[in-house]
Length: 165
Image 1: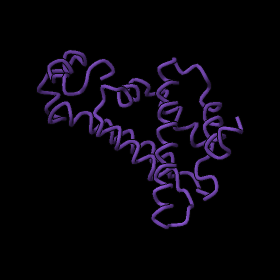
Image 2: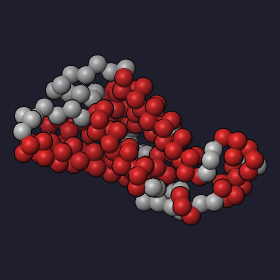
Image 3: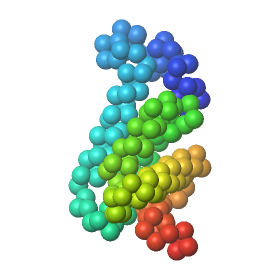
């Protein structure tokens, strides 16, 4: 998926790359989309378990330690993350990942008027797209920066603004 869109990848090609018989593949998955769905679900479940272990505080809902664990997980599963974040990935999967991150990571306390809800939506999209883009760039550049340093950098921007860097 890093080089081809999921719709262009055949089950036969997947089986050849993984050195498994097609009957084995079909014993576990309906098609390549089902495989992608199960991989995505596993990633989301693992990230959720990391986030569930954290005590939230409304001022700083995500800690450097927790973000570091998530980045370590991404680094350890770089091929999966590169595929899920690549431009060849299914846009539905990327939206689901971003929606998931929004739901669990960034509670923003803004007055609940409809105008403020729209602002909150923009803020969350800005944060998520920025973080996902940094994650993608970090991975494409070979993950040279330590995860904890990247975690602190992202959270410094998130909680204190770009001017604090």
